[in-house]
Length: 143
Image 1: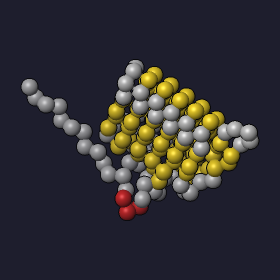
Image 2 (image 1 turned 45 degrees about the vertical axis):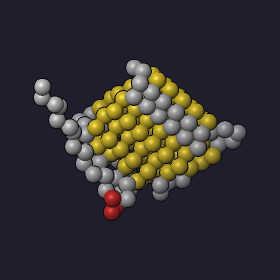
Image 3 (image 1 turned 60 degrees about the vertical axis):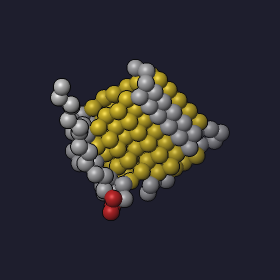
Image 4 (image 1 turned 180 degrees about the vertical axis):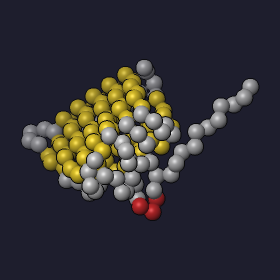
C-alpha cells in the first residue's frame, strides 16, 4: 500500500504493512506487528498486560514505540544506520556502524522488538502522571 496508514483504538491483535508511507497506530492493547519499507512507524500502547509480542520494522524510516510507564517488557532494537534512544534502557553503539539495545523493563514479559536499516529508533515510556489515554473510535457518519 502507498500512502499513510492510521490505526486507532484497536483492542485485539493487529498486523499492518505499507510500502511507501507512514504507519501510525494509537490506543493499542494487544499483540501487534507493523512493517513498512519506506516510511516511519509510530505505535502507542495503552497497556501491555497480556500482550505477548510487539514488532516494528522498516527499511528506510524512523520507529517510535511508546509503552505505559509501568510496562513489563523484554525490549530489543537494532538500527544499522541510525541512533537509538530509550527511556530506562542502555543502548550499545556498534563499531563501525549500527546500534543495538537489549533490556528489561519492570518484570519483563511482553517481547517488544524494533528494527530499521536506515533510521532512528525511539522507545518511550509514557509519563506516570500522563498515562496514555484511551482513544475513542469515531462513529461513522450516517447518511
